[in-house]
Every structure is written in C-alpha cells, then in structure tokens.
Length: 153
Image 1 (cartoon, rainbow, N blue to C red):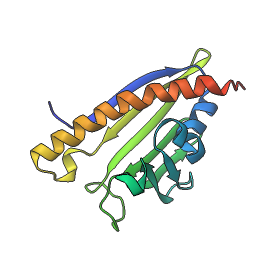
Image 2 (cartoon, helix red, strand yellow):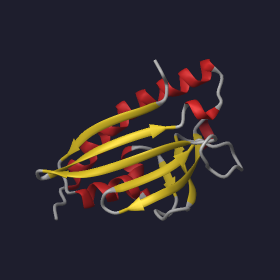
Image 3 (tube, rainbow, N blue to C red):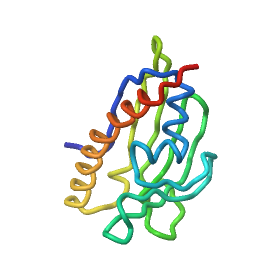
Image 4 (tube, rainbow, N blue to C red):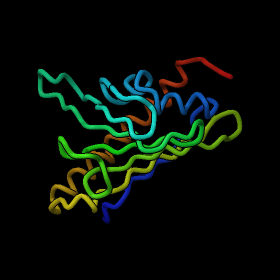
C-alpha cells in the first residue's frame, strides 16, 4: 500500500449548491462529520474542528480553509502541529470537488499529504488507515444528512 492519498466518490441527491453548503458550512459540517466546527468558509480562515468531548478524551484539530469556489470546490488543510501555519509538509489537504450529475451531484473527496508529513512508517500507516476508515464512515452520513434536508432548488 502506498499511503499517498485517499479518494472517494459518492453520488448525492441534491444540487451542487446544496452539497457545497453541506461540505463548507461549519453548521452543516458538524451534522455529519465532527462534533463541532469553528471557522469561516473563506480562503485563509483558520479555526478548528472537534471530535468528541474535550473534557473526556476528545480531540481538537486545527483547520485552515484553502480554497472556496461555490458550488464546485471546497478545500482545507488539517492536522498540522499546534501553533504552526498549515502548509504542504505539515498538514493534510482535503478537497471536495462537486460535479452536477442528473438531478444530483457527484462529490469527489481527495485527501493528500500523508507521505509528506515525515511520519515514521508505523505512524503513517496507522494514520492513513484511520482516515480511510473515517471517510468510509462519515461520507455516507453526509449523503443521509443531505437527504434529510428535503431542500431542492
């Protein structure tokens, strides 16, 4: 296994404008992925996402918005060391590409930068497998969340 990137493609039964909001807005994001999200959906915005209860072993992860092109693309960097500015080599890059398809949207999620982090082999493999598992769990939740919105343009 090369541990270079993770790619997933899913079909969402909603217009790209709706899917874009669901992957870029902190209020929507925390409905299907982290337990909390605090950032502005503008390039360069920094913030954080939270998994679990911070008072009971939860984890706060730095989050930096990289690119925002409604309704086709949203990307961010995350996992950089505390106090460091997110950049290639110290963080992972997640990109959501949205393409209209029929009455819905094809969402392609790509996460890159694992090898560039400089982790020892065991940490690289464990982190990569954790993220593969995580996206496998959370992306179907995105689809279910969107279907529950019952919003159509």
